[in-house]
Length: 203
Figure 1 (cartoon, rainbow, N blue to C red):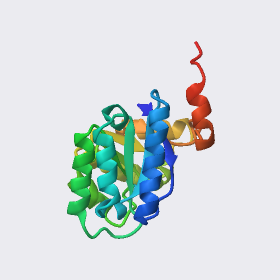
Figure 2: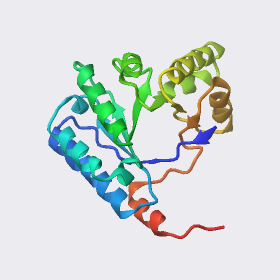
Figure 3: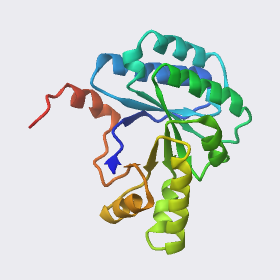
């Protein structure tokens, strides 16, 4: 059981492709500047179905495998997905370059379970509402365990979200999550990332 080890630097989820391109480019620039850092970047799954900006990102990462290996593209669903095949192509292209792909809020999105089964992502992130309900409801805990089990059949790593205390951590571990994310662990904000990366490690 581990805390998620990458920081979500970019939180904008706009489907506007120009903004999406700027967002991902900013994260890539940050990774170039800080070779020891890994970052996650939220991308609207609807944007991932569109061309243009995706080709630019793929072209950039193709020439910088050391950057691609430290980048996690996190797909978020804010509306029904109409072209899952195009998204699957984008996911495969990123993975071939060494980039990891995550699917966020599984169980809460418009078609997140279908997306989980068809996209072949590396990281599956379970919507925190399942853990919230499982805190005091045995039936909900069974549902959480079943969803995590399903996610483990499709993704190499499963993250349980909204872990706020030691009891949440215990429930997540008992239900089979590989990783956890939440306020049990100190959040890292974008404004402090560069400073943190430049500070020497302490014994």
